[in-house]
Image: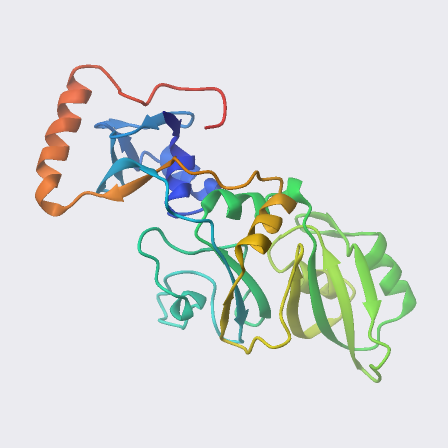
Length: 289
């Protein structure tokens, strides 16, 4: 039983597939003492070194796929570490026995609302991938008077610095009036600050931005800001299916940290495997694991 390295690392919750592929390409992952390359696989009981830390590949038949809804307030960032010591969304999350929570996309510090987090890197990758075409819905308050021509341009497409973009749906709130008007908009991609930049292309400023839906998951009205709600298994399975994933299976591979007292033995074992020219479980494969 073997799987691709980035899938094993994603199963453990170390990051998104894209991020983990960058680690491998940068030489930060070793299998049995040898530097890994993209496409390599690892097998049960292989020794892995990830960013200088020692791990062993094990079979995971108990870790369920989990998804959290977090109602992000203003002023929190979506990165795990911040040199300015600002509060992050991860500060409010329940602890995991192994692995870590992975944010599905990002909300900037001035955006609030629905943020999905999961312990499954494969699911996070699938939900963010452009091929899934999952809708992101926002409630947005715009400063300035919005004329019909601007709405038409935003619905048909405008040219931004990183390519053409548009709103897939844009609906005005009939209760709005004056120069501060609310709209409901949807997009199917997660480019950085896309909603704000689309409005700015029409010389309009966003004064409030709230994400209310991601794919089939909506922000519950009863969920207070800064609070977490875990999706029940059925809804988690439906979300995975919307991103094109099969139900989670048991027996997948992940990694566990090697206890400090066992690290010397792990290094010696890796050295023997590397010196013998045999790379157990790390032969290149063409298919997905």
